[in-house]
Length: 238
Ligand code: DC
Image (cartoon, rainbow, N blue to C red; front, side, top):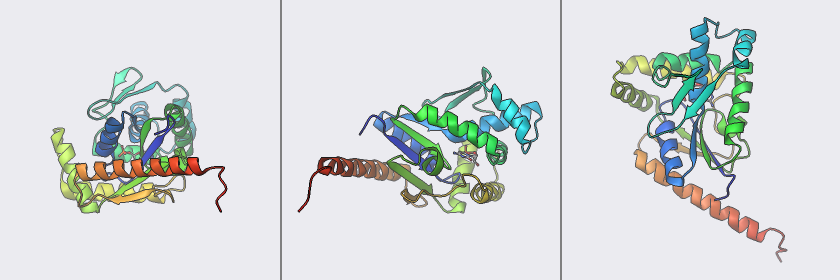
């Protein structure tokens, strides 16, 4: 693979994106960039400061001097905001809704998109989110869109939250993720949708290992096609 390679993985919540992105990144020795964590951190900070999540100018002022550090590791990315570790505080269902709300603000999207492009500039990165293949890195060669049936996604989210010691009701979670998907898909700016050239993977009936193997095979195949393309470049075919 080339030095500047970027793999984008988009999809709705509970589609397996985070776990799979982390595993794919680890297998390839790439860095993992969780863009959802950035939107969660911005929502968290706005809440702390009592800023209305729809108040663009106040959010813009807040973003002027946000100190956000992401440290990917074995599990969820560690998120340090203004020198405070907020990794656990942002991983709640409620913070998912807050992040979704704040993410519809143009000023927030512009600032975070810019940060994400800078973080991914060096390549060898797996970027996960909603718009990473469509807006943040439209030129990425390797693009995936993970999806799964809403009931299955709610079941997975519930398990995840319970593993973290949080209470979770499957019906409540289903209602929350359905609302979040609707809001994320219907917004005017950078809506949740597959890039035209993304490989769409329905993970409903696949294990994590199945999905990771499938994706690594695809990446290898696409990489080979590129090599063949570039070997053929400049040649004149009869
Ligand atoms: O992936 P996540 O659940 O941590 O994301 C939280 C919210 O952040 C999601 O509902 C919408 C928003 N988001 C976004 O708008 N664009 C991204 N690239 C990533 C997340």
